[in-house]
Length: 117
Length: 107
Image (cartoon, rainbow over all chains, first blue to last red; front, side):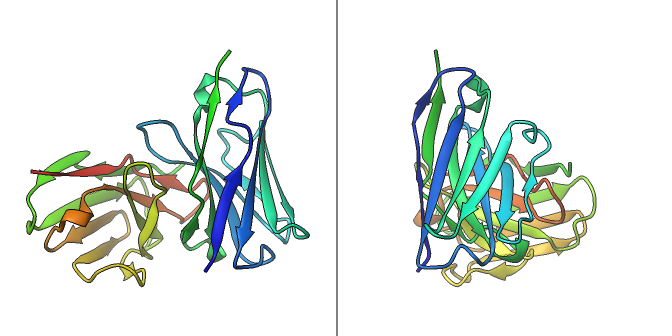
């Protein structure tokens, strides 16, 4: 059974860099696409981007200038960095598996990131 | 970006009722349409992919249909565990986008 678990700081100040890691168990990160999605409290879902071992990475144009994703096959983890955060980046951040760009079939439980001075 | 519009935004229904949720794309997405169910405090769960294929865990009272720009999620007989928010999502092209969600509440 594939499991995903997000980790990282839950509180940031404006202008800081958000750094989250998703640890994958029960499957290899060398297969499939791996995705980050966020959800502000009480609101809908926003796709941040996806990464693949082939270095095929696509970001949401609305965040592209601030986002970097990476993969570490040695630890079976993938990561998200979002720089210059503002209060608008406050949200629950989910990592998810995207097999061949079909649908998000496995999700982490989500981690709340709050941006506040 | 492809805009996904769901209707209604919320609905109230009784156990046993038939429920239909509509999702419309701003351009054709063929059948690159997925549905998710989200319960409070939980991550979304994939319900239906490719417009009409149920995930293995999904009861047969759920069904999905549509192609092009118009899609439907139907629950034939609403059960207590179905009260949740439902999202459609297109994976026709990037950025992948979601509908705003439909909250299904108990009447």
